[in-house]
Image 1 (cartoon, protein in one colour):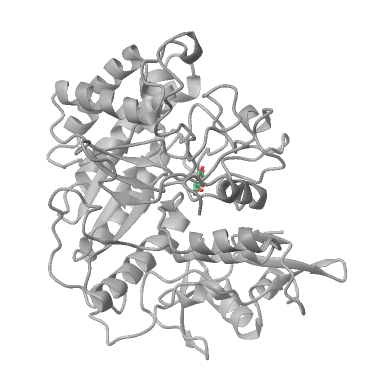
Image 2 (cartoon, helix red, strand yellow):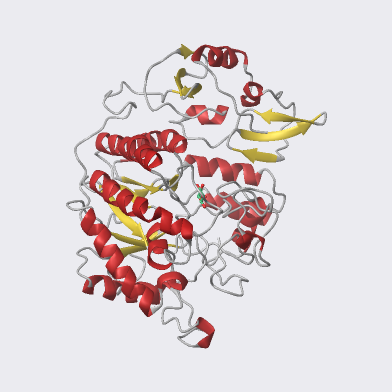
Amino acid sequence: MKASFALTAIAALTAKVSAACFSERLGYPCCKGNTVVYTDNDGKWGVENNNWCGIGSTSGSSAACWSQALGYPCCSHKNVVYTDNDGDWGVENGDWCGIIKGGSGSGSGGGSAAIGEQYTINGNPFANVEFYINPYYVEEVDNAISQMSDSSLIAKAEKMKTYSNAIWLDNIKNMQSWLQPNLEGALSQQNSGGTPVLTVFVVYDLPGRDCHALASNGELLANDSDMERYKSEYIDVIEGHLKTYKSQPVVLVIEPDSLANMVTNIESTPACADSQNYYFDGHAYLLKKLGVFPNVALYLDIGHAFWLGWDDNREKAAKVYAKVIQSGAPAKVRGFVDNVANYTPWEDPTLSRGPDTEWNPCPDEKRYLEAMHKDFTSAGIQSVYFFSDTSRNGKKTDRKHPGEWCNQTGCGIGARPKASPISGMEYLDAFYWVKPIGESDGTSDTSAKRYDGYCGHETAMKPAPEAGQWFQKFFEEGLKNANPPL
Ligand code: BGC
C-alpha cells in the first residue's frame, strides 16, 4: 500500500495542490465514508468499490504539528514554499511538510514558541514537571477507538490519551519528523502553563541494531559508512535541536537492548560480534554529544530482570556500563532504564531464586534494580538512578518462559507514569511508559524479512504487524488487563 515515490519539489507542489486527502498523492482516491480498516504511517485507510481509499482528516493531532492530520510531517525549518488554507508548507526530503504555526517566533528554534533561559535539571528530572503527551499516540488511540464498540473498553481507551509515553526516534526520517516538532509542542505548553514540561525520547538507530533478534533490525548496518551516517545524520542533528531547545527538561533513553547484548550475546551471536565496535563507538560518540546539556538527562538501557539479573551477568554488566560511561566523559549519565518493552512484573512475590527462575536471584524488576544499584555503585559509577518501563507489566502474562518478549497474550498496562513512586527507593526516579502500548513488538508474518521466531511462539499474539505498527487486538488486551485498572 505504501507506494515508494520520490518527488522533486515541483512534482510535490503539483501533488499537494490537487490533493483533497493524503491518499491522493499515493495514487488512491479519498474515501466517501470514514470506516477505518487499516492504519499505517501514511494515515487511515478504508475500502470502497474494492479499492483502498484514504480517510483524509484525523483528530487528535498536536496543534503545533497541524500537517500530521493531513498525512504530512512537520518541517524542521521555516522556509515557506507555498501557503493554502491549511497553513504554510515547506519541502523536506522531497516531500511536503507543514511549518509550525503561531506566535511571532523567536526564530532561533525554527519554531514559534519563545525559548527562555537555560533549564537545569537538579536531581530527578521526572519530579516537579508535567509530562508531555505524544500527539501521535493520541491519534493512534483515537483511531483505535473508532474501531471499538464496547463502551467500557472505549472509556478505558479514552483515558490512555491523558498519559505520557516516550517518542521513539527509530530512524533518521522519524527523528526529523518527531524531534523538533515535539520539543516545540512541549515548549508551547510550558510557556502557556508555567510548569516545566518534560519530553522523553528514545534514541534508537545504532548500526547493526537489534543484533540478537530480527524484529527491530534498523536501517543502519554494522559498517563504517553507516556509522558515519549515524553520527552526522542522526546524533549531530539531535544534538543541534537539544542545543536550541534549552529551556525545557528532556530525558533520553539510550539505545534499548544494545549494551545488554554486549553483556550476554557477543560470543553466541555473530551479528552481535559484528556490531560490537559500532555499539561501543556509537555510545562514546552520543554520550559526548548529548550528555553535556544541563536540561537533558540520559539513561542507558539495562534490559530487564530475566536478562541481566543473574549474578555473573550483573557482574559483567557493571564493568561494561562503567567502561561505556567512562568513554563518554566528561558527559553525564543520570542512570539506567529497565524493562523497556518487556513484560516482567515490578514485584512478583511468588518467585524466588530456585529451579523455577533458573537460579536468577532477581526474579522481578524491583529486586533487579536493588541488586543493580549495589553493583553499579560498587563498580564506581557516580550517578546510579533508575526509571522503570511499566507500560505493559501490570499483570503476569501467559508466557511460559520469561524470555518471551514478543506481543504476549495476557499482558496488561502497568503502573502509571509517576516520579519517585516507591518510598524508601530514593534511587528510583520514576515509573514511566517507554513502549507505547498497542504498538507491535514484531511481525508474525513468517515470510517477512524481520520475522523473528519469538513472534510466532505460542504465547505471542497473532497476526501481528511489523514492530512499531499499530496492533489493535494487543492494545485491547492491555486495556482489559490493566493493573491498576484504568
Ligand atoms: C520498534 C520501533 C518502534 C518502537 C515503539 C520498537 O520495537 O522497533 O520501530 O518505534 O518499538 O513502538
